[in-house]
Length: 309
Image 1 (tube, rainbow, N blue to C red):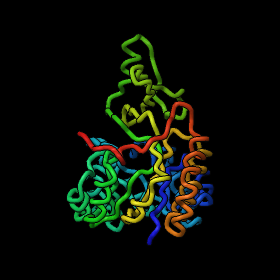
Image 2 (tube, one colour):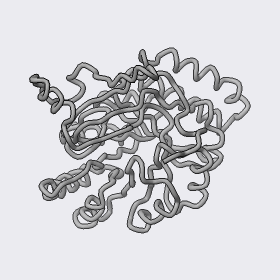
Image 3 (tube, rainbow, N blue to C red):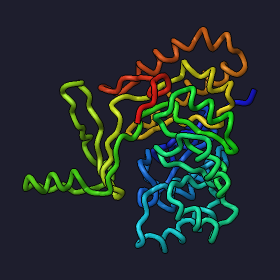
Image 4 (cartoon, rainbow, N blue to C red):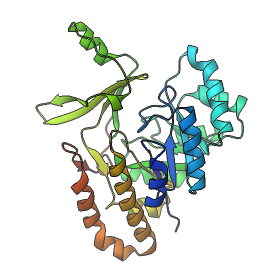
């Protein structure tokens, strides 16, 4: 039985070695101008350093080029993809077909992972992009366990799912927060979210707080809870899911490293000594609950819900 890859999103170059020691197999990095909802900002110099450090520590390095692109960015996108290829990234994560076409033009040997957050909901769609050139499909977060297993059974490409962290609920290319402030006669400098005080949309009826931030790609509203299925890995591992993603967005380096350690232990035991995994999985959940940020309860996302669109 194979072990799924543990894919983690680091906040900085300094996280790479720590995540390797914690048991990660791969990292996803990128620059805000070309990638959506990244845990950390990696300019070109940082990107090269991160890829070199990842490879030195036997990690794969995937670069997010999954933003929504307009005409004015196409020419510079060609240069960026060529740079990513020359930096020896292991794959590019994309959603826009423009990226696929540019990769064919300037970096035809580059591997591609298709990721659109919401559209990968059936195996025909996954296989369509596989036949266009993608080696992996990142499934929608709204799928339940049965749907994920069925897709994997029929997929011609690798399958990646998110097993931990917050998920995106909404994105607009417009600066909705900035426009709101302007309407009030105030001003707000739009800058990298790491420089902002955290903002929330507060749903008083459900007592939920939805993290909201703006960056170069627009406005993003995130889930009020964090997915955590560290105690529900058996079916996914038995199905042969290829990659488990730990989302580090809006989390500290220390948190991401500790969660990675817990999932490394859980996966190793689930594959090698299933009965030991069954004995400690509740404790693993408790360990993660102990380091959860305030107002970020854990749940199982859509894994055990009926998917409704």
